[in-house]
Length: 341
Image (tube, rainbow, N blue to C red; front, side, top):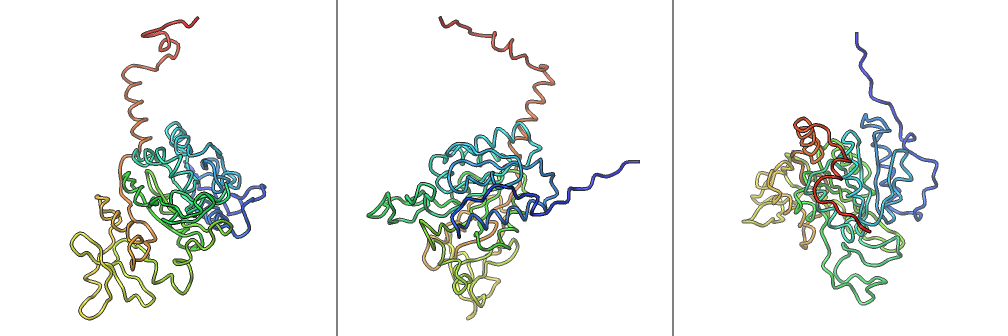
């Protein structure tokens, strides 16, 4: 007679550490930390199977505050370290905590190739549109004309759109949420946790010291319904305080329409996060760059594809079965060898 092993029962407290949380009072990072610590106990995964990896930045303090295994790596290199870990230990649940500067500037190439390979990592990109740790320089996501300490006359850089970047790399799971939308953020985290492959979540996060109210045009209660649209698979793209607006296709472009006068929900796009072609999700990711369009929140894309670590370990298994286990000493002595005197 066999006894089934029950999943561990945890609470939020089990994922809290004894370390003093050292973010500025009012920082949006607290809300993200709280959401992650609330979601992890619900995943049914042993705590020792979690690993949180970070680079450099305010967001990168995250591993200290999670009672899991973790690595605080160097600037922009969290995806590289996390990839090595996931390939060598595919049984681990590996999460990356990063920021818009860490992931999209010095770490841009690592982020792109990690997503391209579909490594089974969960990426939390905190986007506050500023370099907070180094005291307020403009970042790769800062808006055009941003006046900051490094750009006193306004930035002339066109900003990255993190979702568009992830979709361009053909990430198999791409989503967006907001630090203060706790219920939505938790649901999005659970969706990412269940995905097999790279899961990329942009989290709009406020830096109340160096870029306060960066997202207030989306988050304030009186405007959020008109300025955001919640994406739900299989449902039409409807938004507005009275759900009176929607999104439809016009040629190859998206169009905002008002329901009524012959326009019904049947005319609108029905959201399909599983569409195999990322072009549809890419169109959604560009909406908030066009005046009059809402900012999409939720899962833009969620498709299945072979995970990198699975393919690599299967390849290694086949080679070992064919050639036997390797010998590092023999390998080092094979081929061209020279001595340095």
